[in-house]
Image (cartoon, rainbow, N blue to C red; front, side, top):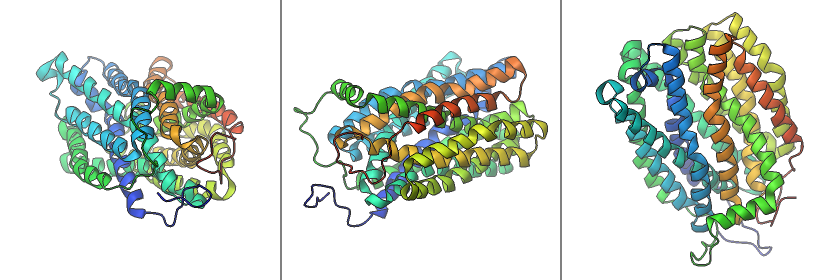
Length: 436
């Protein structure tokens, strides 16, 4: 991109096509990854059959968590690659890897057909998906941030979060439509595979569009002179350790909120006893909130600053989560599960919009993608990969339907405290050497 006389990157106009290409690819990748959470029950029955339905579900959720194991590796390797070679080649790699992982899940024979080898295939597919998504967030967010005018960075970067909501909304709408057409039995038996195949069909479009993106990372480094991935990690920890710790905790709270939301279809069916038709429509409520409210959060972050949007929505979850789940447990209906899902997702989405812009704004350009990728991937790997399993295990052990609320409140309290110590980054020069 051209520079002005001060050395700052010039932004004559926002390239809406480029932003749309990044958002489309990001939505596709999150669609693929989170689709598993929505169909954990039938996937568990297909690959981890057990005499007890709860044991089958927990085994399926453990496999869901395996996908998070590779996220830190993807964040480190692909994130650092994006800082050296550019955002565009990194984003092409991630979308191709996600397609491979999704294809393995969609076409894997069931346990009844192939035995333990079926489990090996789906585990490998989840690992590849985790690698891809771990490397996607940093480059795509850095691209949106660097492509945006300074006074609209919060709003433009918030499309990274909104694209995740688009993915959940699309998954919910298609799943509900397929359930009505195929019936609940067919959907549980093989209809969930169609959902993955539909995502694969969009991959070629995403690859073509992303291949024509303009680059925002500046001049690519000479591979011979570029620092190694290990050197980048050491630099990040040495120069930005406090920021990384705070953002780790802030992202952990956001991740737990997101995981509680993606678990709501399972919670509605397995814990509350609602029908398959009701539970498969839960992602629609999740998606609607996750599309609209990140954009509202980004808009607010551009006007009132990043810190207020980091703090207050998360504090509201601390106050409202327990009463909301208590009402849901007392009155388990379609209306109550949709309302609670929408409320908590809306608050978390507003908060997430500030997170996704404040962290990369605090880092210099040459470690921006790697920094966000690594801290995001580690936090999401630990807490995103475990939350669904932990809350369902707590429910199974205690019989307390409010277990998800206790877990959410605890992490949101920690996230609120960490947000109070985060720096304000609105208006910061993206080429500044370090955090304030």
